[in-house]
Image 1 (cartoon, chains in turn brown, cyan):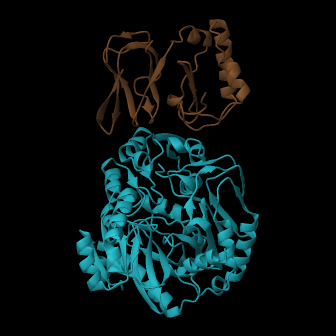
Image 2: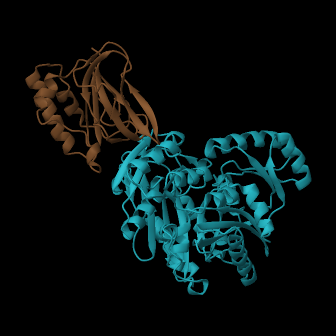
Image 3: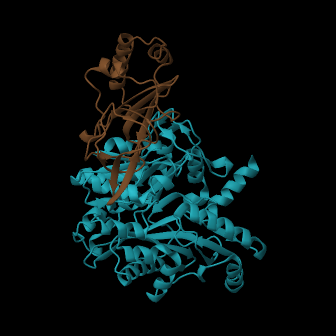
Length: 163
Length: 446
């Protein structure tokens, strides 16, 4: 388990006991929803900006940006729905530069299944269009940014289910 | 936007807040939990830990300024502060670069060109060369200048890319390593050469100019307590044991030089002093690390002045209005092992406590639990002590250093205390050979 910005990165760690409780092997949607809800509550009580947990091919990432409303990753009100849709293997597609995010046409939607690599959007930076690609086939599990959002380096733009 | 990190990013943020200016911080992934990120109104990650991919990443820094609607960029010191191309790019995108004009940065930032310009302005300079293309060219130049010589990075500062060479046999290796270090530090590996003046004093003059041609000096600082790497450790203002004649000459040369290049904003002219002779060494076209000692004795907030001048305001005073009072000393608290050639250390600070009380100022970005990343300068804090006299300032600094606790990495606190306790420092009669000699004596005793 990693509490920080990315797997392997430094960051404040949750207590050891909590990590065991949160990452049980039990996969019942109800149980997972309860655990994610608890994780979100714990996350809200910390001053962490982002929390990324990976284990046995599963991953969840929570984040916030208090300083810019457009950058605050939304935590869905219905965490159960999030968990119900939780894919077996999530692959975050991140911005590697700072700029304005725009989706490509046709506008990608959550649930879209891609059979190969395609452009999902682009970052406009200093007047240059920088392509954001799916980096292979998969299902778009989530779209983290809206058209016109400013994005920083490392911001998660899409999550792909490669399962 | 504050295009920097650490204590200077906080220093700039404080000045902006007091002026009612909203701020945007940039940060690397290694600095995500830093105080400058928390205290700015907005903060954007611009890259991973290594500075070349974050704090030197011009496209991401400019893009951050644009997407957040910034009007101006304060570069602090180090990183992009003396990068004329960066200042030009700011201007190209409608951003005010808080510093002098790009052409002046280029002229003064290129140390070899700066020396030529200063000569034209009638300022005394050390014997030396222009840019050296190859080690062979350097070898021929050294024969002409005469050993010992000092190889210096033309884009340099902070002792990076600098090598003292005493013999012809050492020149090629020193040239190669200085070039590599300068390239890594400044993305510019070009070197020039100066005659090495043995154990001079390092005395610098603070200047401030506006866009209307008004230039003032804010006295001098003595920065002669330097590590063997030529990095400063303790600075004080004013310089002691300096004749009225030499002091006036320094101040006059600094103002004359600035008028010659039509300088605006804050800057520092560094001189080497040997006896009553002073030689121009280089000009730093930015705020200096040690600017607080000048602020303490002149009562001027230099960072606010930089912002006001960049906004097109005139200086609100003339030279005769500027009267120094008292004495100020700054000690740099670095994450370094002073018994191991000041080797930098990274780690987590598990206990931090800073001094307070009358006449003490602490500029720092660290706190208990903060991580010291391995990517950046090792300075953790600057402790500044003010006193009505030099003796009072030293006594206050000793008290402040004894109150300071930083646990988790080695620091320079004990070394600073040992320096302050020496009769040589207390007499004020020291030069840049003082600390290396003290270190050698300490090592011999161990």
